[in-house]
Image 1 (cartoon, helix red, strand yellow):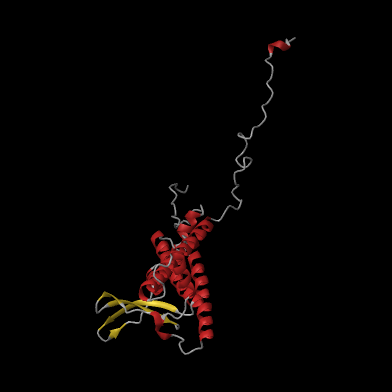
Image 2 (cartoon, rainbow, N blue to C red; image 1 turned 135 degrees about the horizontal axis):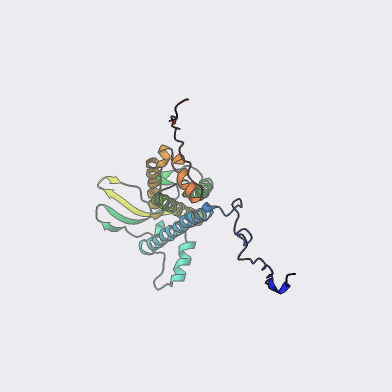
Length: 269
């Protein structure tokens, strides 16, 4: 008869801890679980960059127009504070009668002067009544701002594989946005746009413009060049499938190789 003391006591099974559990039990996402979209953060970053650049360009545009009013008109009284000057700058209208002679930057080529432009570029819509013209410009500028932000949201890696192209497009969109909002603010507050940059040579005279116009023109030229020289022109959607697949963690589709027929080395018996 066997002695029960000859057998070692059995140790109770240790309870399964959280660390020993499967990764799914520790809260790790299962392969089929839907995680955050990889392009969502880049979408927000793109719109934020375009909006920030547009805001900076808007501030530069309004600051240059303030300097034009300060140095090329007699609006501000001597000894007035900055706050008083800013108030007069916002509330004043029709300062052409207070304009001073132009300031020569490059004599015979480039000068700064104070000009009020109630119409669009090159006199666009100048024949319409003031109220209707102002409403058209405001609606057009707001629609353009919304469209620019929508385009900014599309400058993501799945649509623009090249990093430098994405940021170049965002920069161009930001310049156009800042310029459009700058001129819109002028029309909404004053009823006209303040122009001051004038290029001329003998009998040639380019219409006066401002920093907002510079942003719009440079941004549009950049967009045209980028959209006509990049993958958009040669099927960019297909070329961007591979980077998008790599970003989402999926393996790229492999090309199927034709099967080679293997000849049997066994002789028929």
